[in-house]
Image (cartoon, rainbow, N blue to C red; front, side, top):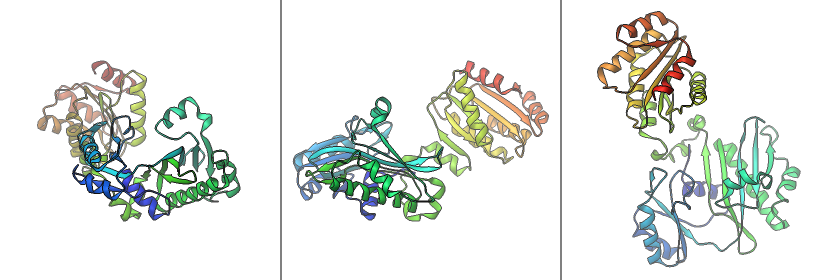
Length: 375
């Protein structure tokens, strides 16, 4: 689960991480009073759950209350990566002497947390990670042992040159780690972690992502959930007890089992196609799930063909077939559909679909090649 920058900064403040004062507005005229309260010279930032706001025109400096109103108005008219800007955050403009990057996330291969630090923070950190990865320092934290203070000091001293800066950076890493552990975060990031006034480090931006699976433990986190993080399709899929993630491809996928669904997407890519979604109907033999899945997939204008891949265990192939036939009666499906059924009651399922004029594959590779070709 993602939250907005202003929400992350509020969380940082609760954990003692130094941030600026701020105001959040939804109407451009509200920027006037906010800018006057914050000193007049302010930065106005779009609040959307995607990166690249600055390059999209979603971050502007304003040197007066009038300029702040104009900046807020223009930003509130933007759509950034398909997300309309509905809120802006206003904060005092900072005199930045240097920008650092500090991020804490999971290294799943090592089964540890990993701290990443760079003394070249800012908007181009993604390019830095690709072009000059050696400039990003890495330090692992074993959750069973906690932070190795000597190792942390050795890592951070390569980026923060003076004892005063090193002390501040060490303190903020400890607090980031505390936040990560206590709130089940999968990412806590500060970029830029900025040097202002020659001696003070401030979190001028903040990004926090939480593990969805742990939200039941944190009602205070769940109330920060933002509806725009989830597409209408994802919301409807959750209501229908379907595991669904929107993607950008042209082949709609209906599969049973998360592992098979991921393997199916890999094979689609192998044969030159791109999946439009991850969709796991689960192990239930409920034809209604197939109907709901097809309703969600067919309203995606990017989808050019549909692949249904069922390996029947608990899921019965004849129930899947009945769900497809039910959907055909209720939805006007004009897209080509390729179906692969194998497993429990596969012969009954294939017979039902054959009687309705469908061709059903047994081999996954053949089904995927077919759906890629028709798409």
